[in-house]
Image 1 (tube, rainbow, N blue to C red):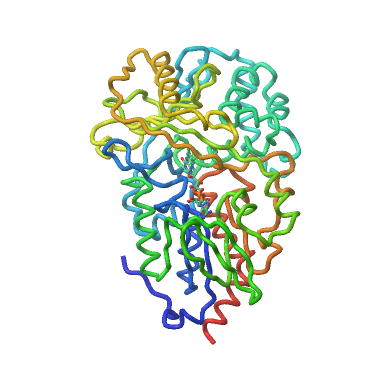
Image 2 (image 1 turned 30 degrees about the vertical axis):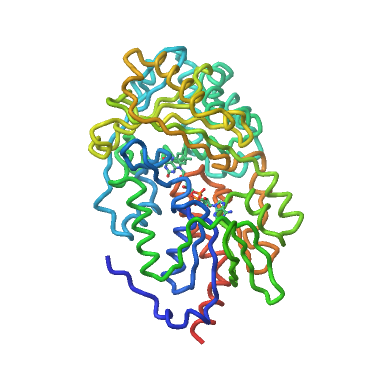
Length: 459
Ligand SMILES: Cc1cc2nc3c(=O)[nH]c(=O)nc-3n(C[C@H](O)[C@H](O)[C@H](O)COP(=O)(O)OP(=O)(O)OC[C@H]3O[C@@H](n4cnc5c(N)ncnc54)[C@H](O)[C@@H]3O)c2cc1C
């Protein structure tokens, strides 16, 4: 692909030097957008490779996403990006099915007929559940849902029985005990995304992926950034950011020499801002510290044969140690996995949960034992590889009045900006929302500063 280079490269030394902290999808998108406008950008990532939550690892002999990722037909910003980086032809779309594991049994819940047959709920409960989902999908003013707890809102609309049998176990699976403090805007965002996806398509659940997984996307973005002269620094954990007397920012790295930049955009989780940005106000720090994060322990299994016909099997039985079973071969061509199956077993937990301290062996044993109970034909001899990803700060939990909690993205320190996924207000965490935050920040909070630095460059 030919990338039009900005005209200002020879003036690089006089240009405003921007540092973007965090090389996940948000940092990568910002870097691409800014570099295309001709800005001088350095992308700084702590890990040895780019991608963050969407990064790739090796499972047995397979390179694939460390966490499961699918794209929806309604993910318009992500689909634009995929087209822009020349990967549109590599997108594959597949109709998927959803399963439910409840009261020790597996059910298919992929269409209305199956929903109506679903035994755990009586007819009234089913109607109330369907009505709640439909009503939520019609709500436009999500801000009023920020003021109500998700458990209260769902009990009111679906009734106590449906709440106890379906919603509460699902909320617990997705949010742990934090669901008690979560606002109804969380479930609204989830339902709206799924509804929009069906509306955009053929009223069927179509999920997509790019051939090669996120590895293809991240590699292509990284190549483009290099062509656009973005300085990419992996393996550069930032330990301190301090404003100097000359108005520039000195960034210290663990085990490396410090560097100086004119402007800094933080895309990392909030705890990192509080820890490394020395000059931020007490109020900003207090606000960041109040944002609760959800973490994840997510196992990836390479299996000799598939385990399930459903992409997602939601689990409501609390004795099962994982939140869901994700069977990737329901979407991804098995050739990508050398003819084998790739299954993810996620468990969402608060950032300080004891599961983070359990050994790989303990987690593996409890997850495999659960699979043996859930699937009569599952045999652990079919497991060729088992990896465990642990991330403490995955998603900011939308607690009551969450949008009032965050400090402005333009920080109290002139030239320092916060543009991370905790600013997603109208949706839950996904790459489309992540890109939206980056692109909207370019048009709003960063625009004046970007204009100033463009003027300085052209002088
Ligand atoms: C289990 C799971 C399943 C998911 N499924 C989907 C899906 O199906 N579809 C979908 O669209 N999205 C999905 N997502 C969400 C998607 O992965 C995120 O929306 C996206 O990757 C977030 O990107 P980000 O750049 O905002 O954050 P991150 O990826 O967290 O990037 C932040 C980066 O900052 C770096 N960093 C942290 N501290 C420092 C430091 N001190 N110095 C330098 N760098 C630092 C981190 O290493 C990281 O790379 C899923 C996420 C998870 C965890």
